[in-house]
Length: 416
Image 1: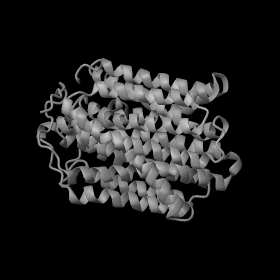
Image 2 (image 1 turned 90 degrees about the vertical axis):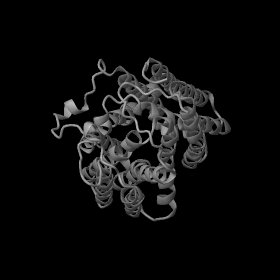
Image 3 (image 1 turned 180 degrees about the vertical axis):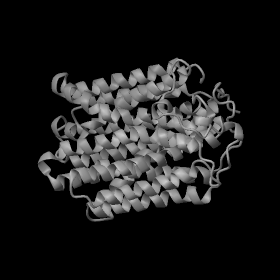
Image 4 (image 1 turned 30 degrees about the vertical axis):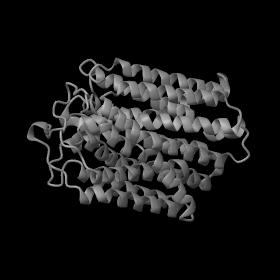
């Protein structure tokens, strides 16, 4: 039996284990939302903006993705707060998963028909609002339904959908369809289709009355705020995740330029695809076994700290590497570490949530630690590359930030 400790904020932790069908349905919904997130950012938006004006494509992409990130920062926790207060006969989460998938798909379709940067920005912001509502819905069920002794294993299955979404979207829009618009339409349809098994096939029991927050919402700022003084474990978990994601963002932001300028790879575009496949394959191999081991031992922090050390080592390998085989090895090491992190840190976070009645909202606040570094990383990375050691300096900085994130996990007291 797992010895995972129930923290003070989660005395209501579920006791009945979930089955494979439930886990598969939730994993597919996660695959849908992450495919819709990453495919436009990595492929469709850059191509669409380059076709409009190749000379200003970099700045246009920064504006579009920057506004989208700002929408994400607010939409996720607000949608989570509304989800916590939903009392429909379809449950709290399923209406938001379904509605978010449809709104996100509509935003992708709208984006595909735009011919100006403001129009693309508006479409992408709508997509971000819908997809973040969907994300709020697919994140909360692990805390709602999964017992502590199974959470890391289930989080492993849902977590690996993040890198798999990137690979699936890239393969589909580059091989299955022709053209940017067709790519958007395919991703939009796939998002809805992947959400359907969970929404239509897995009934959601209503929460106990004691776990239903009052229907009246506070001001948005009050909704987003979680007091670090009252909930220090939550604050340390948030800051740790922010730093780890910042290290990951610093390490991946200029990967294409690193391969072209530092490694001098003849075909850096193909190189990025190869590294992505290696990274994803390694993550898939480690996530579920590490999650199961964490559940069996009842320990979280040692796994999170250990995988942060592994990811930092991979960043240092990139700082020292100057040849393609070493870079491929670093990608595999980084993926192995990140797979463990996806599974175990998500389980840890569900154990430090301040209030069971606000799970989706608080997980939305945690998700700010995922999206916020994507906004901050470009502002930090550019001066490091220009003035503090070039690409090796950037990867040393990524390693340092990742180690700091791993060390802060030790400050969490309510979880072993």
